[in-house]
Image 1 (cartoon, rainbow, N blue to C red):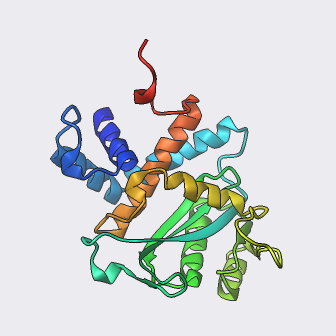
Image 2: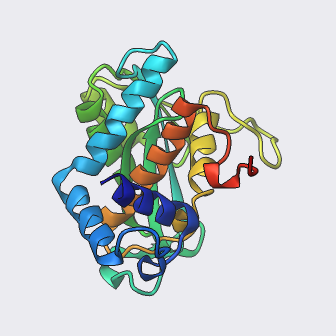
Length: 237
């Protein structure tokens, strides 16, 4: 099983096609079987959540956070993605899918959704808040950007979550890190270091969610072990 996990992490990091996994890893058919099995039975999310709790404990935090930050990201999808699961982002004029994520103040993933790029941020925001309320009941505060409208604020109030919109300063130009919200931007940037996430290559949105979870598993494992770079880059002894 360890080698199966190594193969999935290798695929997430390098972005290679399943059939091009190195020969010293388990057969592609076995790796993809367990990837799909763990995706569907909740094992992937369970592994991710257990690691998140360990990282929070390492930072002397409670298991579940009391505040989260929400954001969305549009990425192009591959040609094997069914048309019913993709769309055109009306704001960015970019076709593909949207990833919506909620992270804690350490930048750890609490909830994720993957939908067509044509879906409005309000729909993504309400779905994320529902998942946050289920995954981390202590959450009472959420910070979002101006793309999330009143609908999200009102939905959060119904769940007992105070949703605060954090906008850019008037007259600000270029990239300016915003208080509270920079953590989610940092997490999105870290995820994009995994080449499998540079574009949405998955046929099923559920597989895209699973690949995001596996990418965060790799990030959190390195946080816990203190490894700054993958071991295969270490110089020979």
